[in-house]
Image (tube, rainbow, N blue to C red; front, side, top):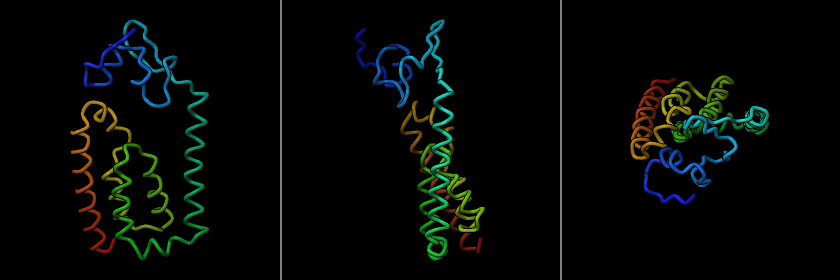
Amino acid sequence: MFCKRTVSNPVEELLRCPRRPDLLPAGLSHRDINWANGSLTLELDPRYAAPRVFLWTFGAFLILHIIVDRWQIGDMIQQGQWIVLMIAGLVGLVPESGPHLIFVTMFAKGVVPFSVLLTSSIVQDGHGMLPLLAHSRRAFVAIKLINLVVGLLIGSLLMLLGN
């Protein structure tokens, strides 16, 4: 079936043109989609999803352990806390919660101050922003920029106060 691109919303276009592989999110194929009763549902096989999530999480914690404990990067972070605050804000722009674990773990180990953790927490929204990204990129960017400015202002204020 040939479908012209007439709809700006990719979800609506996927519903209208169900066999367009270029409209599927990364990592999904048409066999992951159930079109029963005309509604769209995703059926991801947990046998493949769970090991992938475990390996990504384990790998991230392993790399973090090597960077913080083996390379003694904690001293460099203490000297460049303002840079780390900016990095926490920028990493928070990623619309997933995984990168936030880096700052949670570093705060738990006493490597970064609370102001860096709070900045990362304010800026990052986890997966909650993905539906807005699919709907309106302009609104997504506007909200993320507001979060970034507010997070950096509050984090900077706390860092100036000594936290």
